[in-house]
Amino acid sequence: MSTFQQPDPRDRPARLTVGVVGAGRVGPALAASLQLAGHHPVAVSGVSDASKRRAAALLPDVPLMTPAEVMGRAELVLLTVPDDALPGLVEGLAETGAVRPGQLLVHTSGRYGAKVLDPALRAGALPLALHPAMTFTGTPVDVQRLAGCSFGVTAPEELRLAAEALVIEMGGEPEWIAESARPLYHAALALGANHLVTLVAQSMELLRTAGVEAPDRMLGPLLGAALDNALRSGDAALTGPVARGDAGTVAAHVAELREHAPGAVAGYLAMARATADRALAHGLLKPELAEDLLGVLANGTEGDAR
Image 1 (cartoon, one colour):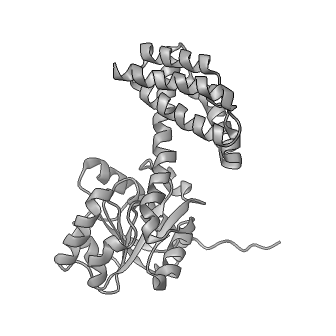
Image 2 (image 1 turned 180 degrees about the vertical axis):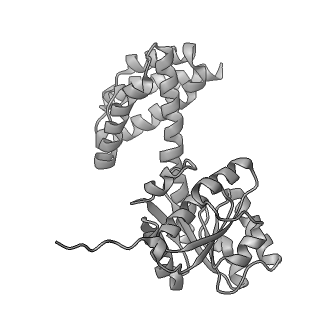
């Protein structure tokens, strides 16, 4: 029987020194994943107490430094700051001479492609946009979740292989996104993931109001099945009163929401209209039932205006 054992990544020589500018939820997790692949995190910047705690948990013994110092120590720098802060950060680093020729500069914004790194490109950096399509908690579990996670990758053609290789080393799956498509790509992910959290949180609040003691336990199997069906079948997975054209039930829903959760009415109506449109287009909602349903939804909107 073979006694071969996979070598511990920590025993391999580090191929790149890695720095993190912005110790939010994403940067330390990506750096920790790169460390498992044999790279060597050497510096991280963070201002808030929360960011310092994240860095300490995911990158123990990696020193906290200023962004300029991180740039000076690392061959590969992860810029993991909020989208709106990224252009100014890149311009500032380039203007102050912090960017070094040949330095790999990676941002993780979903909104931007590689063009936002143009000021650093002109200073000689190698620009990569690697956006993990994953929600992060800021805890070590994030490193595990990167296994099989898709990354939206945008980079100059000559750096495409390098970008894809880094994603694969982090356990991810590279998905090439054109520069011009980045805003649409990001909007799609926000629509599916960010808004899902809002919908689930609202649903749990309503269930508690209705007297359900464990709304998470009730919703878990239902939402898991709905997500699986949607990913497998798309619009064909639509169910419920809107897809069936049960106008009376939808009217009762709106009335109850107005009484118990008026803040949820607008979202319910918007999603119901979108669901009705898709159910009609897919042939699930019968046209003769759609008229009454759409009338209920229109009256619901008028009720909001009063």
